[in-house]
Image 1 (cartoon, each protein chain N blue to C red):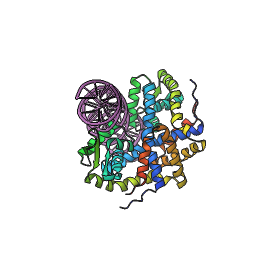
Image 2 (image 1 turned 90 degrees about the horizontal axis):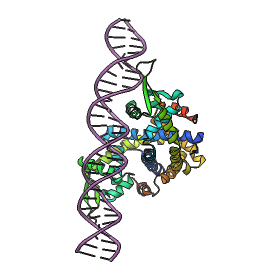
Image 3 (image 1 turned 120 degrees about the vertical axis):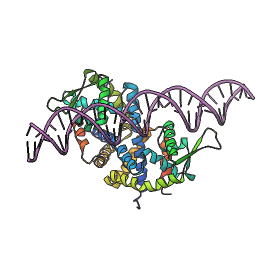
Image 4 (image 1 turned 45 degrees about the vertical axis):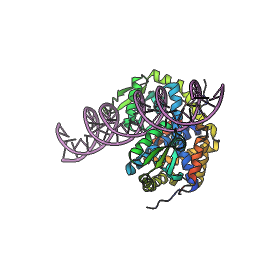
Length: 166
Length: 166
DNA sequence: CCGAGTCGCTTGTAGCTACAACCGATGACC
DNA sequence: GGTCATCGGTTGTAGCTACAAGCGACTCGG
């Protein structure tokens, strides 16, 4: 099997992309863990809940909006529940389903954590980019995303979060 | 503390980027684990060794080229050594240092694994992008990388791997 | 030399994720 | 109503990573 090798341009782009994918989670996790004792994924879960009507989402829906598998989400939500940031209740209309809801403490946590997190995102990503590059990044990441997630599960979450700052 | 919020464009780009960062490692790990019982990070380690003179690198140098911390690399190399893909030997010129070297089996593993991995990278990333976008991606990832890794440790590895296919 | 400080790396432990197995609830079908 | 496949979610276990501590080797000033 003779592979189509990568061109020099592709290889350069690939190595940089891999480095970003490797380092970015660590930076985001680091800041949030220091300042709020939260993983970036924890924060993502809380943020998605905070944008939902009544601060409530079904586990399955929450999983797609956080790009997570259901087992992973289940473990994380259990820990968040133990910390009093989230609570779970069986869905009245479907006995199988579970609704996750942000508690008062959880909502407060999101509000006090968001500024620091946003500052980190700005500092490490957007302050390094021109407005033109931001738009290019959106196109590129969107195109790659369609290959990574053919069913387009993620697209829903993006649309929902676009009308942020509720 | 009043944060500078993200613009709509920035938020859209950010959510897509986060999704890529979340999903890409899983896709890469998945293919390599199925086909070669390797993590993407394992593969990265083997690939960097395969490009080095005499298939040998110092642990510290290998860590910078794989964007890893030294403890992480140490654990991974120990496992690879147990599988006979890599071997370690104390550096003759510096008693503190350790040299990691690809074994014959490790070199064979890289050669038989590379085509499938490259196909995955093409399929999920570069086939979705125009040549222009590839070049934009290189600039964008490079700019972000400078913020994530101020000391520029990673730059060395990029330069070294640019002259690939040796 | 010799002691303090640093370097290069390893080890131990806690915590998170992936994968697979599992379980009750639901719906389709007869 | 009973059976079966599927859905929505949880739990258990193995494996990897991060963080902190530790340890020998080097260096440099006195």
